[in-house]
Length: 156
Image 1 (tube, one colour):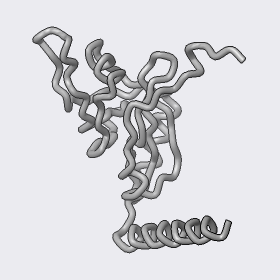
Image 2 (cartoon, rainbow, N blue to C red; image 1 turned 90 degrees about the vertical axis):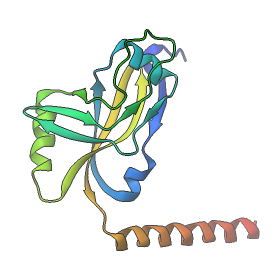
Image 3 (tube, rainbow, N blue to C red; image 1 turned 180 degrees about the vertical axis):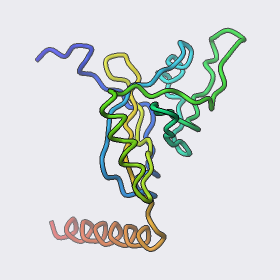
Image 4 (tube, helix red, strand yellow; image 1 turned 180 degrees about the horizontal axis):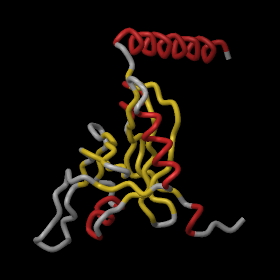
């Protein structure tokens, strides 16, 4: 089997808190409009999506609060690390996402950023915020499953 450049995916950043804080409903793959030194910094893995969110302005989607560290080898006129970045999607996908987020309590959250075929992609999800008791229930379920795996492992 021959793998070409389009088959390889390198995960740059993963937003683990998104799955804990939100109930993810539907995911989309979006392109990301980056500057030259930003993509070099992203390839080095200097991306943080912890506090990031997606906002709609007009008929466009923008990634807010995503931190891409300045590339050290670039020129002195560097970019702002927390600047808004435009997401690249098809018009019908943008319209679908905007309509879904107008429902009560829904938001758009970035879940991971990766390089696919040399291009920066970001996975975004339409999500509903979890309540504190939902988070506690998720922790309890995880602990029960962990204990069951431990017990099964000891028997074998």
